[in-house]
Amino acid sequence: MTELEKIPLFPLNLVLFPGSSLPLQIFEPRYTDLVSECLKSDSGFGICCIREGSEVGEHANCFEVGTFVKITDWSQLDNGLLGITVEAQKRFQVQSYSRRENTLLEGQITWLTDEDGGEITQEYHALRDFMTRVFEHYEIIFDEDSYKINESLWLGYRLAEYLPLSVEEKQALLELTDSEQRLQRIQKVLEENKFDYGTQA
Image (cartoon, rainbow, N blue to C red):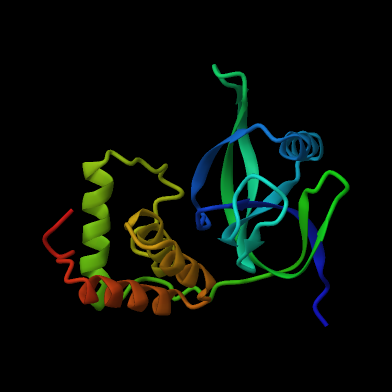
């Protein structure tokens, strides 16, 4: 039986994919405590997309598959709030929930792995070229080690991250464990919406 691990959870109205970074403003005491804990112990937390409820309060109902993140930067913002930047690292699935005394949500989780399909095949070259144009248009720059536009896993995550898809569709893409299936689904969604990704950016 797979051993469960307990991690703190941060419910948000978004889906975060491995390899992404996200700035956050922290103002609730339970989350300032969480940030302090993570910085002191060099640990991280999970971000889960909210299915029902709100980001503020105690009773958000989250999707079970989320993304583990670690804090890469923090500072005091001009508005007096604590600002942090997190980097998404890997996916997990929540098996059960609990709450700390300060109402911070925790999850007993198992880690999920992706079946990396390796280099993209010819049928996904148009998606790759489209994504390249998007990066160039918005001047999105990756360092040399993290830019893997020809790898199906990386390309699928970046397409899912940057395309204007619904939260539900992004969550479905996050939950897939096969990188080629993820590209197939993205391609199908674009074609169903008559999006000419071969010529647009």
